[in-house]
Length: 246
Image (cartoon, rainbow, N blue to C red):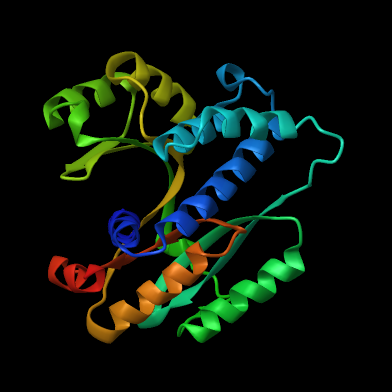
């Protein structure tokens, strides 16, 4: 999942931190509300809600915000959000999957089409065949050694572990996510994230102006309130990433 970690690292070093933080909280609150509305408002019995709360805590979202988002799900005036997936290509023929929660499909489709077009991409083309659906659980590097995490992952029934300086990514079958997460928590504690994700079957290396244009597209998508997550099959060399983050 190089695309995910690289983009996150770059965006965290860029400006407008307060505005981005507020936008992140808005997206997290929306996911919490939708998860609580679709299932029970108790994370112990609602795997999606539990994952949403974990993600919120990882971003230091205040407890009051989390509780307010859960309570909002039972309100009579709660907005109805549809889960929508958009597919397309970015600069350098990078395949992108955009997952959104929207209360107006026409508005979101129009906004995303504009974003893709302005940043050298095309939307509306099927790219999902470039990816594999999986459950992804992430722990920070501080949780322990690669051997420790590997042993816990094997015992939990996970399929794979990828460890680097950014931490440990543990993957499993989509329908096993909740069970694997529960076993890992018993051994390693609460993860930073636990969600369904997309893993590229092959990656596309991008450099120079193409990498810069791709980052512009990803940042514009991230700035859209309806967009919850973007998966891409791109790979950016460390030296190029350092320039982009500068």
